[in-house]
Amino acid sequence: MKDLSIPGVCKLLKRLRVSYKRGQEHVHSPDLEYDKKLALIRQAQRQCQQDPQRFVFLYEDEHTYYRRPPSGSGYAGTNGPALRAEQGHGYDTTRRIAACLDVATGTVIERQRGSFNVKEMARYLRSVEKHSPHAETIYIA
Image 1 (cartoon, rainbow, N blue to C red):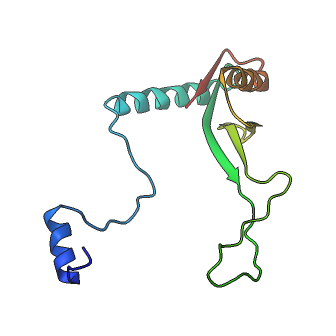
Image 2 (cartoon, rainbow, N blue to C red):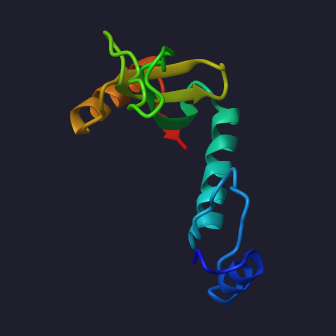
């Protein structure tokens, strides 16, 4: 493409149906059951508002976050390799957090680990269950 002019590149991209797009904050998947699920969530919320002792409603989410080493600065040869980031204890780690928000009380129940396998998820859900020992049903959305 080095022989093409800028307008020539633009025409080529247009012909290939490639365009410049802004990123989206949220990407929605086409869930055919979305309306049905939303109705069930609203029904559970109403039930929890009417009898908060027997029914608990929680919003739950999980997130993986990374801790990367900080980049340093220093002198190096102009044509030499770039400086490497400092390596130290606790750097370049991956963590997974799962948390629930109790809608009625505002309490957050969370668990962090290096990873969440099936055993860790079961432990997390047991800790959520311990939060409301008298609840007959705990809804998690």
